[in-house]
Length: 173
Image (cartoon, rainbow, N blue to C red; front, top):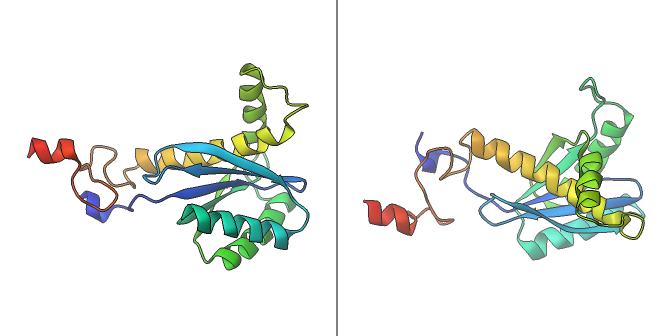
């Protein structure tokens, strides 16, 4: 499959939804690396969707990635339905495509990583949410790259964002 036939690279925003706080992470424009962005207190879904829509616009995001809590057996429960309702509101508020991904244990993993880095979680509870968003977004980016769904990866032709060959690829030709 030629690189131009694959999904093009795009900047994505990862969202770890919680009733108290929402964590956000953002990818680089090539869709390779996710970094924690911020977390904020959620008061209402309308306000949260508006805040995320503003951030998505300012950051020129092209894809929203929303963590969906699943039961350990993989089924969707009440929490997944709740996140689904928020996701529909968010997609309507932004006009952007939204992809839901399993967020199983992302908060646990985030807390563990932060503790290992010496972060006092009592003083910085919101950091967990932003790092959880980073984990779920990075998992999606890695899955896409491994499957060859991102142009220039998984053995495909290297291209810049605008579809031109990279300098290294140009020199090789």
